[in-house]
View 1 (spheres, rainbow, N blue to C red):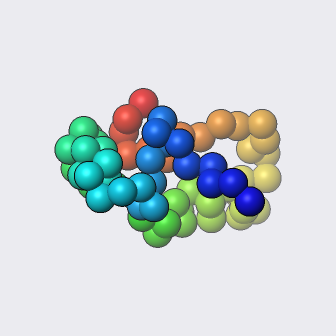
View 2: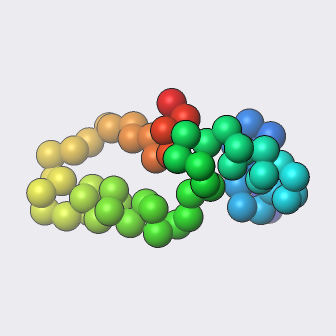
Length: 64
């Protein structure tokens, strides 16, 4: 299985210097953690989110 992480989309699995570079440019000042996505995922899976479809939601710490 190939690794989906590319230089365009670095992650916690990237080498430490690359993570540090991303952290330095992140508007929120840190690299996101899986826990940062819990509320968004919960909203999409809950009954209140049943009318949400074909939606592209960015959870990128403000890079967009």
